[in-house]
Image 1: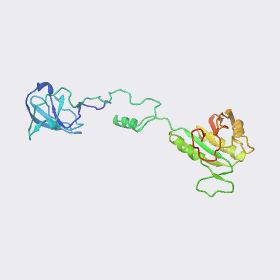
Image 2: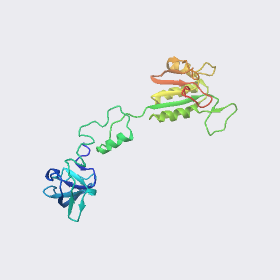
Image 3: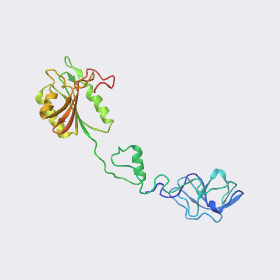
Image 4: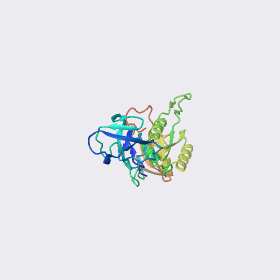
Length: 266
């Protein structure tokens, strides 16, 4: 629909017909009615008549301009003013913001609060959208403990998963958190298979280096494929990318403390 859907006043004042007023000189008009937002005037402007009007109210029939209330000398039934008035003065014409049939949102665009406001303004209560991408997160390692829980001997708290959760939520993802998985091949295999079943993307932390307890890379190769492993970056060299049963997979190496720069994969 067009916005505004009708010619509307942009200011508080008086709706008049500028074409009938002429140029300079004192003008005196009878106030024949009023137009408020949501309550249009039934009277007609012109022929010596003005309509009291307020911001956002529909322009009455016969009116093509608005004279500001500050520029007139008003009595109960008349107004007087000296200013010349031009056609279209202080009027927002129909379709001034957007014309009927115009595009307010293209397919593939991520909807912002402003887009939602445009949709609402055009009376659109429902739109077809793509659901949020489901990202499955899991960490591996016997040394990991959940923040808030007591630390066991030689354990550290898992920070990677929490950082990745916040980063991905900021991108509009739906997070499926499978928690910390011990360094036990069968449990890791089961978690990876579950991740492939429920997620669109799998992101893991730990288990992709060359240690005896680094099982993730070999299990991914068994369940799917590894596209590449290791990059020329420190920290973060043993990064892996591949898929598990067709679900894209990325494995970040474990870090022992929260990242201090974008160089850390997590």
